[in-house]
Image 1 (cartoon, rainbow, N blue to C red):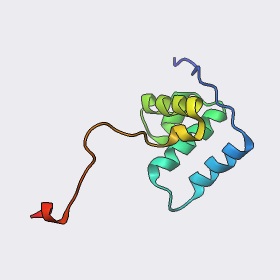
Image 2: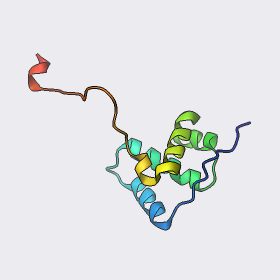
Image 3: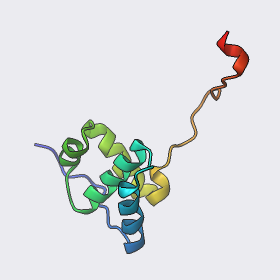
Image 4: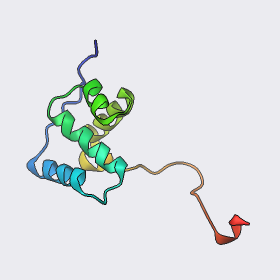
Length: 95
């Protein structure tokens, strides 16, 4: 039996509208749609395992995005800067 998440999500009306718009936007990247759905489902009171089944992701990933939204709100759903050298693809590297 899974435990209840300590990160209870309560959305403002504006946040809810932004997240719902993101899930309906045809041109949204898939990862943005899934993260928005995670936040919306969490706000409905769903457990992480239930959300994971709905969005077809591991529970640990759902937990990560739920926590990030709880801590940073909408900004938490954005990608964070990664360490290491940024990818560089120059035309001459294809030879």
